[in-house]
Length: 105
Image: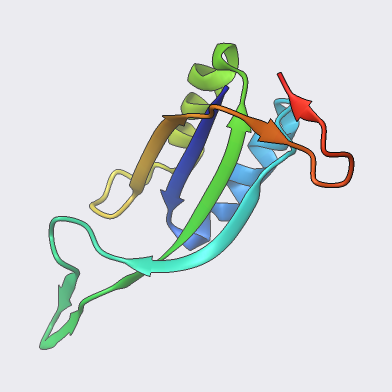
């Protein structure tokens, strides 16, 4: 299993979530976050914005579904401009259900 963390523009959140749900991936966690990439924020006229708002979407999927989920996020979150976001994928070693204590294999 893999954990997918996608940092996307807040205005693209609903479109991404609905597309994931429509494709059979309804389980996710999302939260508002602030940060910056290698461009160190953005300059608009005389004002420098050091950290920009993003939405973090986190989900755990089977290995076989990673490419499809990444494709959906990229297709729905892309505007073509700097700041569209990033997707990080990492291994999930173990998963437990808190209520039952069961380990998901």
